[in-house]
Amino acid sequence: MSVSSKAVVLIGGPSKGTRMRPLTLDTPKPLFPIAGRPLMWHHIRALSMVAGLTEVFLIGFYEDAVFAPFLKDVSREFKNLSVKYMREYQALGTAGGLYHFRDTILRGNPGQIFVLHVDICCSFPLKELRDFHGTHRGLVSMLGVRVPTETALKYGCIVPDPRTKQVLHYVEKPEGFISDLINGGVYLLEAQGFFEAIRVAMVRKSQQQAEDPYMYQDDLLRLEQDVIVPLCDTKKVFVYETPDFWRQIKSAGSALPATALYLNQYHTTNPEMLAKPTPSGPEIVEPVHIDATAQVDPSAKIGPSVSIGPGVVIGAGVRVKESIILDNVTVEKNAIVSNSIIAADCRIGPWARIEGEPLKPTSVEDSSTKETITILANNVNVARDVLVRCCIVLPQKTLTSNCHNEVLL
Ligand code: GTP
Image: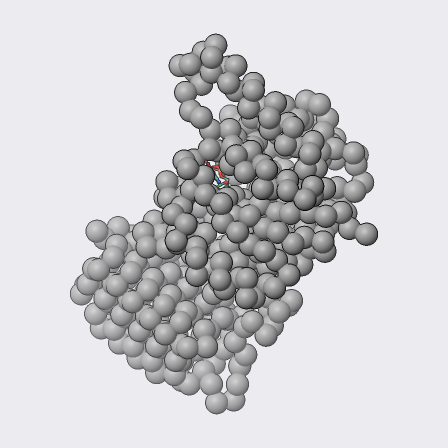
């Protein structure tokens, strides 16, 4: 029988996710559409498949109202799960938020707690993580991911015992290289023991603050630095290395590779979620997501790695590839959109070209930056024949002449 478990998704708040701007000016990052679904929908879907898991808490410091429609939708879709949002009165840090809501999380005495960062895209191998957790006697199993050596310093780096997988050293964003195995932001914790470790970390931090108020000014309690690192010293942390895909979603551009990865996954696991080529429909190069309310002219060619949102109108002869097109965008005849994100209510004139540089399929890095793709924020108009290449365009602009490598305010 499986151990009872609950889950927490750490979703941050409006002061986080600023690197996703201008896309998150109107939509909070956890709701930004990735592969046609809100970013955190993918987390909830993965959690809904864990045997014995019935409760998911989203912990953050956004206004409550912003998540109400999403919570309604997921409760309808994932009937086996109760999903609740719990709001921190201010940012408490990744462990502070967990501790603040400990009574609710521990109600009913769950054996294990999954904790997921929201700002990642991954296959969420939760069953594998749980199986691995059963092989050791530690308090924490964390998901480890191999990244290219030159990018490792940007993450929490893990040095494990090669045989037992016990974490010998963990350093958050080290100054020099220690390992290319990094923290993927997915944990499985022994509930009682781990919350006791957070309590100890809380007491330690208060003592440090009392002794040196200048050095320890903030009230944040961090999961990695304040709780996991001391637990590594007591040999309680183990790492499960996934061979599957993983990306961090920090910058606006990282929505594109994340969309491509999820579309690829669902093409294999849930093809019914994606658009299928039909003899009378547009030419589809799979995998592609097209919302049921979008209208795509049969002479258009769409894909691969394209997500088209509700109410979008795609005209005759249009070509779209490796791009995200959000709600109510109109793309007029013979326009081309590639390696770009087009936010809601934009209008792209006939024969216009909106393009970025092709995705790098091998990199796990958050590499699609503002220099390499084009992002049109809400309500941008692009006139006919205009070429927009590798630009960030802020809301409400009208573009009537060609632009390259620019940020247009
Ligand atoms: P950065 O590169 O500095 O962003 O560090 P990081 O990738 O380790 O991310 P960070 O630790 O800031 O956040 C990890 C996850 O926790 C993200 O999903 C955040 O949205 C979330 N998070 C961060 N701070 C808080 C907080 O104070 N409260 C809550 N509930 N969530 C948080």
